Amino acid sequence: GQQLNQSPQSMFIQEGEDVSMNCTSSSIFNTWLWYKQDPGEGPVLLIALYKAGELTSNGRLTAQFGITRKDSFLNISASIPSDVGIYFCAGQEGSGNTPLVFGKGTRLSVIA
Amino acid sequence: KAGVTQTPRYLIKTRGQQVTLSCSPISGHRSVSWYQQTPGQGLQFLFEYFSETQRNKGNFPGRFSGRQFSNSRSEMNVSTLELGDSALYLCASSPPGQGYEQYFGPGTRLTVT
Image (tube, rainbow over all chains, first blue to last red; front, side, top):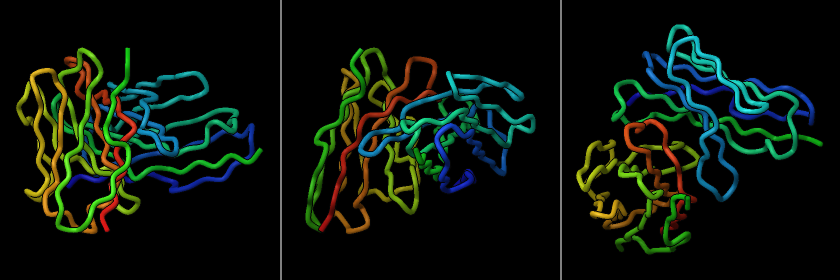
């Protein structure tokens, strides 16, 4: 089935640094979402994107829906220790009832 | 509003047994989706239920089944468990008309020995 390529797989950064991660697909998506998963918990929705070129922020997080509709980016500014976790991108190819496809995640570690 | 709840949180079963997992969606959400999460494969879509009907199905064998009740609560069942079924099983619910916004529960960690 459809797969999303998410990179990098893992990152080790210093507290205060900015972080960038991205997700690409081989086909066009109509919706992109970014989730964060903490250990022992389910993923939590961070940002949802609905239009090509859209740039949306949620606090220190900013995500963009790529203009080709085949990619999306997530940036975290001024990272803090609680940013540690696994970040997943997810996309939806078709209409509102089409299942989401998830990337394999980017594991973020923050060194204080 | 209370979040998505899943029971049990942890489960240990033996190969060949069957298991039933339960999910209660956020109040007002009628769509419930199930996912299997493993380190190697990531989040894999199992199936989605809406108004007691299976609306979408992922690429899993028939040993994996589910159902949804009139109060939107959902159960999934795995029969004849295999070692490879060990995983975190996540349930997610969606608001009406926004099936792409999934709100996840904490998951059930299933270990098959």
